Image 1 (cartoon, one colour):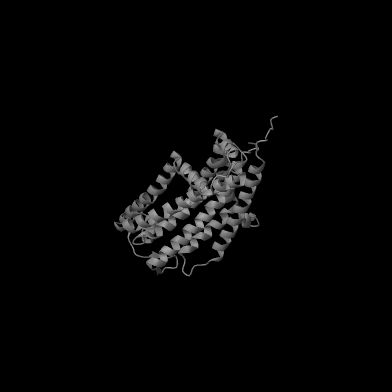
Image 2: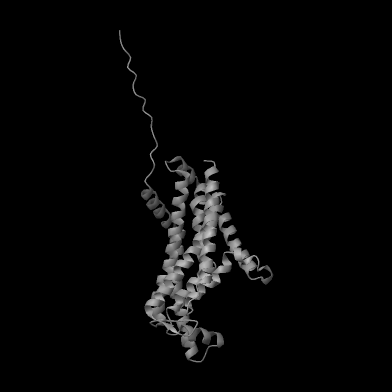
Length: 290
């Protein structure tokens, strides 16, 4: 007589992938994209070109060959190289940096959904909440990197080409070198938060579509519409909810003393857009098929 012994049933459990490995993998994947490298390269070259152009304008004005506009620019930037990062950060915030944040958000979900890569990630041992967190982390790091590149290259180019050891403020006095760098760092942080807010909204749109161009067009279109609405006095009741309406206050970093009410308001507004954007993205990706 033989006795049958029941073998233990072995169930295969899906183990979660380490968060650190996911974050490193996502960053490597995003940074190695050709358009990401091109975008970061353009951001690195633009401050040098701007510094050279301002230097030429200064020389032209000193020779008496420039008009009033050239003379005005020359009087502001001559020996005031640390003003260059302020100018470029504010100019880039108007469209370029938000466009890059929207582009990376579009690639993060819509682009990978279009190619089928997102389905593979959902089948892997990665929860949807973790997946969104990893994608948001990658977009946030690249956005921060873009702002840092603009700020650092602008500082170096401004000092090397335009000269100066301080920053001439809009109040007419000159800030010492250390305080000037602190103002630039503050502006870079404020600009980064605004770009994160735009990227969060773009990520929510990216979670709802498989077409990256739809994300990019919708985000940039929204920025343009917000800017137009913010310039209509009759709609002043709407201005407190417009993200772009608070961007002008970031220029207060070159005032002395520096008013902070507008900056705090801009950060609070950006945080609201961050929360709304990521909440919508999470709600959509949690119910998205495969």
